[in-house]
Image 1: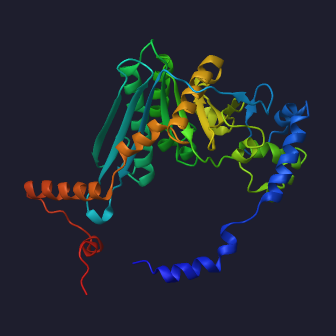
Image 2: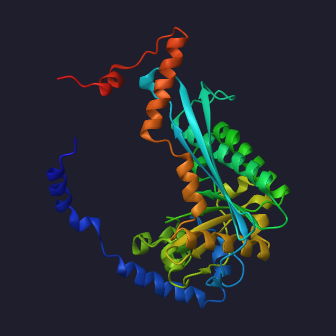
Image 3: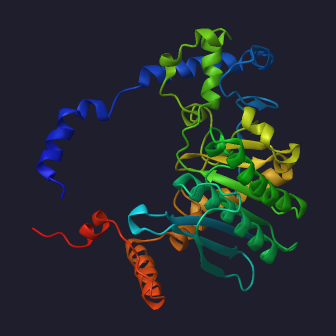
Length: 370
């Protein structure tokens, strides 16, 4: 039980550390941002620096702000996932991945909404005999989200109306960067296969990241501050400056940035037509990050379609895409669902005349005696 009075005391003791003033950092960042945009040779200097931090590439003006008009008639599809991890206290290596999906049609006769969720139940190791850790379950959930999204896009796709498949999170596989080769290969092959199928069918897809913490644009400022010598990086000078901070310097509501290409070592894991690109969009409430594959990023018309549909979704959702919010509601596994999951396991065990061995810790949680 939470002792609220003690919590209040603890929070008041460190209250000065909760909300800190970083305005001096932002002032420095703003001045440097203006300087690099007045330097016609800046892009060349960036390429020549070979910096160790994540530095994007771009075409055209670095500070380009493109006006975006919200779409009217279109179809939005989103998928999201949730899970119950294997619980060692339950004595069984079972886990659940629940995939929620939403299809919403706008501006057409008979338009409607389709909501769905589909549970995937697993027992034991993967085909590759990889340990079933929480990281493994998370990556497998991502693979199912991609696959479910492709299936829905193909099912509902039409030449009569624009369509967008929207994912929550990144298309850049940050979560695989530090994994073992076998682990990476197992999931990258699945991810790439689905993204390639979307490309072959010319089905538009993008990912949406709310309140992103990326620092690729702020790294450009750091490069300039250290005179393109990364070994002298003055990181602390603008430590709290994020890409969204930089985007706020020049993006007005309903404007997007230029298109940036992700260039870290992770990009080598993708075929050329699927290499991840990203855009910052001011949706009127926040600056969000949108990630798209290269085949979309290289076509201005497709980029315009994607961003227009995303902006309209954000406006309809008061700052967050409606389809993503609804897909999350379909996917989420609540506490009562979790209890039902374990109750069902126990019931199947009884029917099979098998006893589920639970840890004493798990049993104690179900009834604490004094």
